[in-house]
Image (cartoon, rainbow, N blue to C red; front, side, top):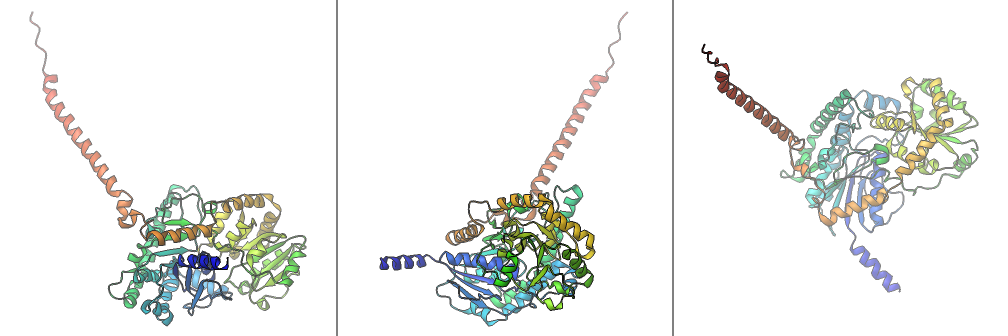
Length: 518
């Protein structure tokens, strides 16, 4: 029996693939999506080598960390209000994406020996597939071309405007707003026009600012290496963190697969005992309050914190469980019903029996976890896609939006009263949550299946013919122009014929009748 088990294990390992994951961007929320995808593959018996700035805290079977230093400043628990203002609000967001999280990450990574060893080294066994993040640093797609294996892109958000062209996906801007805009439903003509202009402008803007990545690729992979735009169109598959239950119906090509909620895996450590005791004793319920893995709420202006203190303090005996990475920097007078923490296994908190609401910045990962756990939300968006996310949830009646810049005590009081006592939010959230969790396979199993499919059948197995066509061919502009010209020619010829016949018949019509003989 023992020998049989060993034989089965060997046979299973023989069918495992070797996969390279390249995720050097030091953004925790992005890495959550990439990490869980990688772990899902390892649980299927595949070997995954992961390049990132977030190594595992303890060994994970078949998962090998290739740790690289951060190209950008440390973001986790380190982003202040002032940094947000200067880097996000006083600067074009797409430019920040392209240059800082794209070009700079590529430039720094290619200078690292750990990265270049992957280019020059001999890999035994060879890699079967490369995973990259679809965000801004698309230079790493060059590894697929270099290793002669398919490349699969992972998008930790709904796809940004520059992502659809990579796999020939039809975005249909008539009813799908791009996620750099605030959410819009049933768009008017002017909204649709703005959606089209905004989408195409920022797509060209992104492509322009990331074009230096082509030079980097040729510098490190050789002059004959393809440019970044060519590599983007060579993608085999994109897995995107969107979902029908949240984002609604939209057209998708087979090479774009929605796996929203993939990162929601209950494998975090337990809630620390002292915090768990406090949550268990919150018999009137508690509100979970966090601005995500990066923001320091203690760095916000004192008027904003004063409003929070006054309004949240009035909720007692309802309690507030609030993240503050450096609680000693909070102003004095923290209400007694507020308990702070620096880090917490979020999914376990959201699933706690006493939770009543979630105050969030609107990050996609956390809000998806709240939807999965059926917890209604108050959203205070800060940057990037958070505005779109929160507006989308407001439209579904599962959240209330507040803007911290003009937030008053009365506005926050009203939002808290609504989210806690108006049953529509919790009832609607339960329905959305059920729909979010309903599917033939889990998001992670879906992702693993299609990755394995690409390895088995090659990088062109799911590719749309639209990838190799010009935009005006895909949009049938040439066909519409031809039909228009043909119709005009037919009308022109018809008019000429009618006029010609009229001229022939007109003398006969105008000839006077013979005079009557008396």
